[in-house]
Image (tube, each protein chain N blue to C red):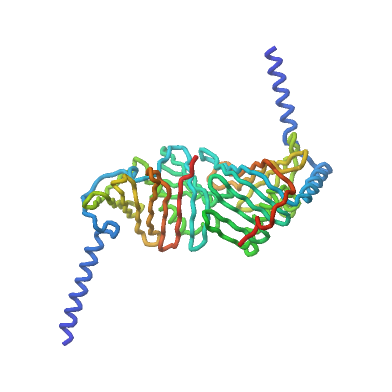
Length: 215
Length: 222
C-alpha cells in the first residue's frame, strides 16, 4: 500500500512538472499574444496593491516593500510605497517624479535615453503591455497551469536587465507577478532580482489626472 | 631704516607660526577639553550600530550629491570570519545603486550605477562605511588620545590608523556617541548621531563639505 502511494505521488509530481512551463510556440503563441494585446488595449486605468521583494545573493534576507500602483492610459504610472517608508514614484509622459520626506526630484526622461527606456519598460511591465516591448525584446510564452508565463529578454545585452518574467492569469489575462532579473555581476554567483506580486486589481475605475501631476 | 622693519616682520611671522603650531596640536573639535593621555580601545564601544554576524540590517539612505538627491535602501551584513561587510544599496524601485564588499584590504566593487561611478565618491563611501560599520569589529584595537571636558560630561577620542585620522565625541551623561569627524582633504567629513528619547539611534547625518555631499541614514525596522 505504501509503495502504491509513493508511486502515485511520483507520477502526480511528474505530470505536474510536465505541465509546468510548457513552451508555447507558433500559432498558439500568436493567438495568446493577440488575446493579451486585446486585453491590454481595453485597459484605460488600473489600480492594485503590490508587494516588492528584492533578492540579493549572499544576503540573509530579501528586502520587502509594499504599496499601491495606479496606471492610466498613455504612459501614466504612479507607485506609492507604504513600507518600509513612504515614497512616491510617478511617471507621466517624459517626466519622472520621485518624492519622499517632503522632498521631490523631477527628471525629464527625454534628455536621458537610459531613463526613457526604463520608463517605457516600467509602464509596460506593470500592466502586462507586451506589445510595447516587442521592438527591443524577444518574447517567449509558456503554459504554467492556470497562468501564462512570459519571458522577455533584451535583444541587445544591456548592463542592467537580463530578463523580465511576467505571469498572467489565463482567465482574465491580468498580471499577477513580475520578476526583473539583473545581469550577473563579475565576482558574484547568481543573479539579483526584484519580484512584484499584485493583488486587489481593479480595472477601468475613475482615476483623476491630478494623481499623476508632476510639478 | 629697512632693517628694523624686516626684524618686526620676522618676529610677527615667527609668532604666527608658533601660534599655528600650538593651535594645530589640539583639533578644533576638542577645544575646551583637557588631555587625558592615551588609551587602548576597541572602536566597537564607540559605535551605536548593533549588528548580528551573518544577518542583514536595513537602513534608509538619502544622499544629496551636489544638489542631485537620491533615496535608497542600504543593506549591511557583517561576516566576522572574513572581517568583511557586504554593503548593498538599492533604489526604492529595486535596482542596485551599488554593491560592495568592505574588507581589511580594501573595497571590492561588484556593481555601481553610472551616476555613482566616480573615484572620489567611491572613496568617500568606503571611508564613511568604514567609520560607521567596519571599525566595529571587536578585534580592531586602536591607540587613542583621550580628551575630556572638565565636568566629564563629554569625552573625545582621537584615533589615527591606516584608514585615516578620526575624532570621536561622546556624551558621557547620555552614554552615547555624538559625533565623528575625519580630516582627509577631499573626503573629509563630519558625522552626527541623533537619538530618540530612549537613546535608540534615530538618524545619522553625514556631511562632506569639500565634495559637497550630504547623506542621512536611518535604521528601518525589521
